[in-house]
Image (cartoon, rainbow, N blue to C red; front, top):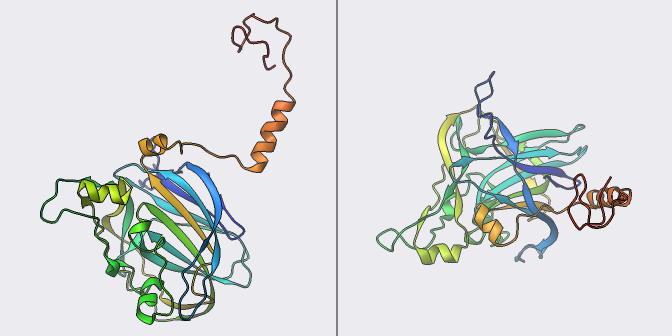
Length: 307
């Protein structure tokens, strides 16, 4: 299932268990991950000395996480003829990168597979099971390191300028177990050199004690895979039209047993799907099978059988 809005369509992809490598490129093949219990709401930002509190639209869903499984974020941007957009990715409360999108006359689709750690290398996103150990040296509550936000990103700009307060459910320990994609409108953008220097590395906390895990409320976290070479990218500095996003998408990832325990393994139908089901059921007529008889595809002692 895909989270949709007038701005974009977003989904998560994980490696296909059936075909691991493409025969031509010898690379992993991916498939869409199922999203559960999608919903819409409005979130509010924190007020600051320079900016009032702002409301923005949120679309969210639960996603199943599999330990030691890589994943990537797929985005399909709608046409935006005259507006520059900034796409910000925040995973587990850490900003991973912000990407500038110029006006487009056609829909564009691309994937964000990992974090660019240097100018020419990146490390892929992957789910990792939180390691729970007995209390001891170096083992305790989940350690959140604010310095690991990406270099040149909007969050570090927040901290340096003090213009706006980061939102605690987006940035920080409260956001562990979530993948968030924010959209901003860009007022202006300046190209600064041809080579992207990278966002810097990220080493999240993966070992806690039982109390720390209980407080955190999740069993999986996101870590980075091995370093892989990639192409150089351009560096742009952008000015946003307001301090907080106008739209955001959130995937809350949990293991299968946690989703099952909380009755979250449901795929809610859209209005069109509900209408289609209603029409299909309305057009199906019961067959003339006497009560108490078995029938093809039916059950005993059931008086209605679909034709």
